Image (tube, rainbow, N blue to C red; front, side, top):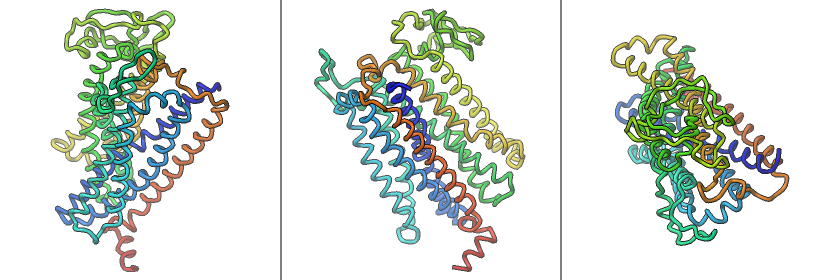
Length: 447
């Protein structure tokens, strides 16, 4: 493995792990705050137990996200020093603000975890809500920095120099809103389905059914809202990409020839050498409509761009297809959930219905990872789109592949620790969190 490949692989691996923790940190506190609100409104102790159970999960994943996020920040300087040398002063503002949001989140989480029976009950609830707001803000600010890499602005590039820097304009670049909106919606969808699936599994196992049913219904609502919002946010993101990075759009669709009334393709195997896409289902004129609201609009093909500026077409195309596939599946499951709420209430107790959510546990995160693959790989060969190539930004330090092996071991270890801790939290539900469980009553009497 050469140093360039090792550096890219390490960054990809780190991003792939961290994005999961980040999304959970953006969404899980809102589930926790909603359950807490239900407890304050109804006085039902089940919701209090659920809030406490979810808050422990939030704490575990917050700590892990802090570790992986810190590692990522060091990797930017370690792996891409030339990039940070020029870009740091331009897009440093969202990272600085993200640090502030992180500290607010940490303080609010501490208040929430240790504030039971100590604070005013609504102030205590607000602390939990603030954890979600600051976590969501952190995610949006980091995406703003990534948006700048896809749509660099806020400076003048003259004779290789970065002049007249405007950090505010750089932060609010053209890509930040489409990317941040799509990322936020995807995070709610992915985390909602993952949490709902875990509770659906425990319902199927007949463990603390009432407790897990309430948890399942809250998480499922978040999942459905995210799933239904994804097509809208995806449409906004796709139109933005078509305007700013037409070559990325062409790679997403493996669209080689410029044409009017371009079809939207489903599936297919691209051949970059021959410039063709085989075995794809083509829906006439839909791609033109999606990117410009005009069925006869012209869509540029890859052959209109220099070959050395093509991203890896097959990787981008397959990732885009995976994202679309799982997105559609989650929308269909969401429709079935809505149907069960309003028309088929008995579905909630059916094993096949719960199995749908169990199977969907990884779907949102698979779609999320695929979407980030489209965003990052689709920008290649640029690290700053149209200005700096990725190969020109990589570290000159030899032996970087050993760093890749080390960081891989760290992330694998973190994943195993998280799984162990979360499993232990789930097993503690009868004793610590479900007031209707005999074990909970026994534990309470012992105290």
